[in-house]
Image 1 (cartoon, rainbow, N blue to C red):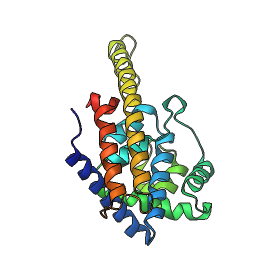
Image 2: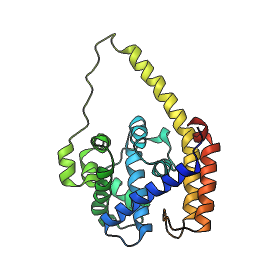
Image 3: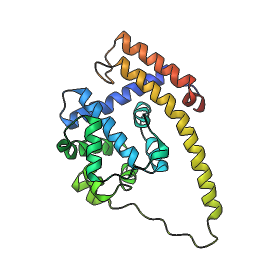
Length: 229
């Protein structure tokens, strides 16, 4: 089903609310800074997760943040198993901040997600991270309370083969659908970012943002994501 313009307006408002919350958490006057931190957090988490878990986490995000999350995603190259120092370097590079600020900024973003996602959703994603990386993302106190991801019990011989095959097939179909959606979502977010260049996700009325919103809505309605929805 096509995404109506009213729904897209609501998506912009929701993303703006998340960004405002993050700006307050960071104590940032510059919303562009908050936007960069949000994007860096999403991308560095996404690339460290297995494909299925990255996709599962995306389902909890508002529409525009989901587009930001998938921007530039290469599922065939994930998960990228980087260390704590490599995570910090990646976050610093994407956020354009000193590496020394990452252990303060990343947990601030995590706190916003903890408030806005349903209980257990964030914990499930963070549980896939190795302890040293999780400690930077969530902060020492939150990370210590989460522990490692539970390991499934090994199936006995001859049991669960059909189920595993079905899961693999389902995963391939989900990945194909995700790849189709990524193109449309990424293009829509790019158009929105250009239209709101002076103040990302700001809801102040202006002809350029309004025109960009209409164009992005058309992309979502006519692209693979719109047809799939």
